[in-house]
Length: 349
Image 1: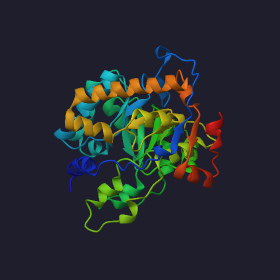
Image 2: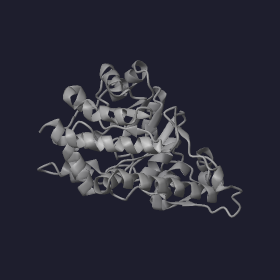
Image 3: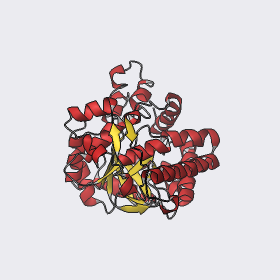
Image 4: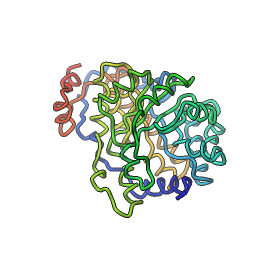
């Protein structure tokens, strides 16, 4: 099967499969503040992603590219949305364009439609330093996202089977690239040990890509003759993975993604410690069904709702929202306690 057809299969199956809704946000509850001492007009949503300033903590996460004209149109529309909203946007894996230069235009359209915005490139952990530099140059990327997708590759009929030396390759890219390097999971979550290793080699940010959103094991199983059903429920839920990432001794930005759809889930992710929140499948579904204008309207609503919640919590900016008091219960509480991560610090701060 051609890489182009596989890219389109991923989009088609992602839309058909939908979101898992197992990210764990039902386990997170804000402690109400009766005296927030705050005004809606005071709320600021600007933040930094990978050391780069953006006007919104929400970014359009990696989805597509390399699938011909259909993916070019999707990336064009997403870039228009990002430009209108002042949001960062990440393209899908650029390896398709490195192997077939004719596909480069399906990624370059993002920079063309969003000339002054924050655009994040994307490659897998198999990439070399030269490939990383080429991907950055291709779209004039402000940062480069290296994705980790071991379970997806193992489930993919034509996927990779060798994942040795991935950390070393990422370290070489960190040293050889001239932009911040972000590392992202694709829906199976990261534990604190992996995050600590990544920060120790100079990675600027991790996107934990937790379990609970688009399930790439399920997608790849739909493409197999004999399924690997045990991978369908494999992974660390998004809420757990954010807390795990924040429990490391090393410092770096933590980005949250994986089944996040609503303003409340975005607020909870930030309260758990996320510096930014990536959304992919939910935005793609709106775009494909209802178009650019509807997605822009939805994003305006999400931003306004986020500001209202921050006002109710007395959090004038995202740093203050990261310190909002929350109660952690259910499976998230159990997991974190088993991993010796103190949940009381979230309710007592």
